[in-house]
Structure formats: structure tokens, C-alpha cells
Length: 423
Ligand SMILES: [Zn+2]
Image 1 (cartoon, rainbow, N blue to C red):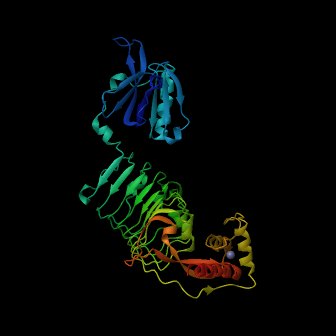
Image 2 (cartoon, rainbow, N blue to C red; image 1 turned 90 degrees about the vertical axis):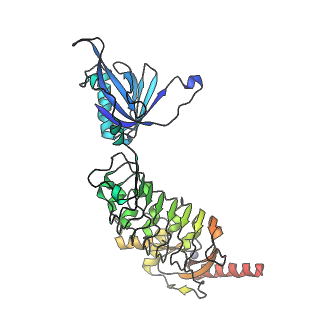
Image 3 (tube, rainbow, N blue to C red; image 1 turned 180 degrees about the vertical axis):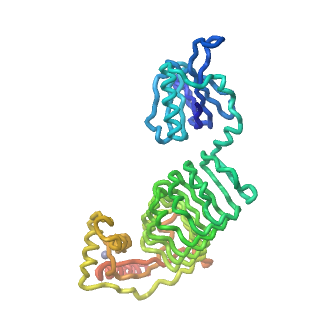
């Protein structure tokens, strides 16, 4: 019986000697087998565990029969477990294993400890071939069409896959079976549409789709498991005009690249991306920024080469007096943070509530508001700002909403007051 995983053998004597472990596992093949104690058939035998790594292909043997002090299996569903041996006093820490194979392997290890026969004789515990480690490699980089595997499958264990300049017009379904993928780079291809099943790659942290033919990023992807895993997203050099408002539910995002698209607006709930540190959307067609943009706290921001317009002098007044029943109930729900969902109210109402505007006073409004544009200095949201234009400006127009005349006048009054103070 064999198991492919990462292994670190930790001596329990090291801390007593004031030494520390490396803390890093090596790719290994674990084999379980019998070793005869005396020559000749029918003699006493004992179960052994053989740990082979690429550097030590002959491997190290550990006795298993009545030699396990403890099995740590709390994280077995994540592919991790530890076998604590009595002699030598080591912990064999297993990680990155396929969880069902690991469970099977651990039950066989338990049986071996109790002295039950393990089927395979130790003679089968031969040195592991290099090719066997090849099958379990974690990184693969392909940068030309001729190297693209057409007949062979991608190794199941891949964590980092890059296939650039391969002329792909869609995402290869075989990639979507690679459940360990953390980094997927499909840049410089001709991909037009993303399958929603990309969202099933539950460990995916980095997705690079730069230089493709994408026109959109689907709502389904925003609702997928990527919400919990995705940190870096590169959509630069595509043909995207707008991102859905649900995009801002990808809350783990820290880096977003949107340069060289056709964006006419940024998702207006962008302020919800609290972890965002790096944002670039240079050379798009943004006329202004959404009001929530001022809630961001970035390290780096690049909005060079957009078509920012001068702020509107006259505000757009959409105030309804008195408020409609829909407007006042929506405000009540949102201002009191009453939970809602499509199981309680119609779906279109949920969408309306999801897209409600936030007034400068912090309260919400749906259809009754005053919309104005003011200038914002980008240094107020980012540490490093790339100049917006060749004139050296870092000021951009930003939309503001006001839920009532009072809020509007109050802001106007403060602005006037400030301008009197300054000039
Ligand atoms: Zn207000």
C-alpha cells in the first residue's frame, strides 16, 4: 500500500537539545509492507513503514508493530495527519495527501500496529522511481503551444499551473479537476468566457487571465468558493466594460489588476473590499469613481489614462416627497440592518436592497436621493498613487449621494465653510 503526500519527520528530542525543525515537508512516497525477521519462509514478520523522498529514494524504514504512541487525525479531511512513534521518538507529519487515500492508509497503519498482517511483503518496498515523483509534482509552467499536453493529463497534485501563449480559446476542463490548485495562470491566450466551475477550485488564491478576450466576469463566479480563497486577480488586457456589483463579495481580494480594459465604471460597492491593497485600472474609460471608493485603504493605486470628467456643477435631484412606501421600508430595513434574503422577499427586491446607495451621513437610500460629483484626492485612500494624467494631478471626480436636502445642504455648507477658510 502506498501514499503520496508531503512528509516531515520531526524528532521529539530536538527541542530538548535546543534545536528546531525545518518546518517544511518534502514530497514523499510512503509504503506499508512486511519485513521478515529471520530468513526462510514462515518465520516471524513485522510491519514496516518506508518513507522515500526524491533525495532519499531507498527511503527510511520505521517499525510499526506495537510501535505507535499516538495517531493525530483531527485534520485528516484536509489531507493532514501525524504518526507518533515510540521508537525512534519521532513524529511523522503527513500533509497535502488526498484525504480519502490518507484515511485508507491510516487504517492500514493502525492494523499494522496491532500486529495484523499487512498484505504486501517488504520485498515490494523497492526504491521509488524518479518518474513516480514526477507524477506528483506541484508546479508546471507551459509557455508554448507545442509543450501543451494533449494526450497526457495534468498531474493531479499540481498547485501551480501556468499555460501561457498556448492559443487556448477556452479553459481546459482537465484543469478544473486539479483540486489542489492555488495559482492558475492562463495569461496570453484567446479565452472569451470563463466556466463557472473555476469557482469549484476551492484553494485557488491567484488567478491570472491577463491578455485574453474576456468581456465579462460572471455573477456566478462572484458567488462561488472563490469568495473565501481568491487573493490576487489579474484581468488586465481584456475587453471588460463593467464588473458586476457582486464582484465586491470576493472579500479576500488583496490585489486586482484591471488595466487596459474598456471599463466605464468600477463596481459601486468597491468599498466592501476591505483587504484590498493593490488596485490598478489604468487605461480604461472611467468618467468618475463610485462614492464607496473613499472607504478603501490601499497601498498602491494606479488610475492613469482614464477619461475622468470635470465634476458636474449641478446635482441630479431625484428626491421624492413624501417617500414612497418602497423607499421608506427599504430605508428601514437597511438602516436597522434587518436581515433579508430571497426566501423572505422577492428576488428583485433583494437586488434593489443590495444596490442601495449610501448617503454621506451613512444612512441608505434607494430611489430617492440627490446625486452630486465632487473631487477627491487619491492620496486620501492610497499610500502610493500613480498620477492620473500627464498634468500631474491626483484629483478625480467621485459620485456622492445625499438622502435628504438636509444632508445635501450640510455638505454644501461645510464645503463653503472650508473654501472660506482656505481662501
Ligand atoms: Zn443622509
